[in-house]
Length: 211
Image 1 (tube, rainbow, N blue to C red):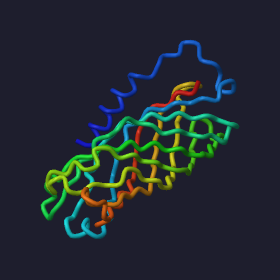
Image 2 (image 1 turned 90 degrees about the horizontal axis):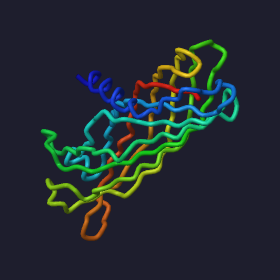
Image 3 (image 1 turned 120 degrees about the vertical axis):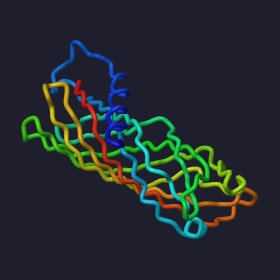
Image 4 (image 1 turned 60 degrees about the vertical axis):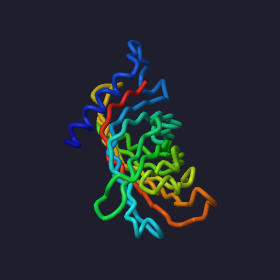
């Protein structure tokens, strides 16, 4: 069921790629775009109140748009974008619904692409993730008396591959890991009462277009 959702999300999001009828050769244009369906797998480390209440972010599938710029044939920068995603938060032994927050998690990575393997083009990358949280105090299970930090800055690592079907189009497999955490505080005085460490693994499938 999760794989079916992944594919449906990919197809829907890929429909927004513009059709370029007169693309330049791959050596003439440094830009590449990808659309991916990402399975967001939170690791949910906890401390403080999170440990006692078993506060967790629920895994979900999200769409992703990636824009790459090649400085050389091997070195590129990639900007990873999506729209604000709703994240369901559960708590307690039975993992009952505690509330919903939003997360906007752009990342910027520097990549090395291996280009001497024909159509198969693996790459590695590393960079930073900056996640902006919204609806930060939307926790009805706690009487909306707690909230989370507004943002999280962390490291992100990446391993992936493109398989080019022709000079422009390809398919993409990608895996990222990001360090992501947020403090849980009281709404009344902002006292720190715990920490939720999300640290998601992000396996993805996608479509590549090289201009």
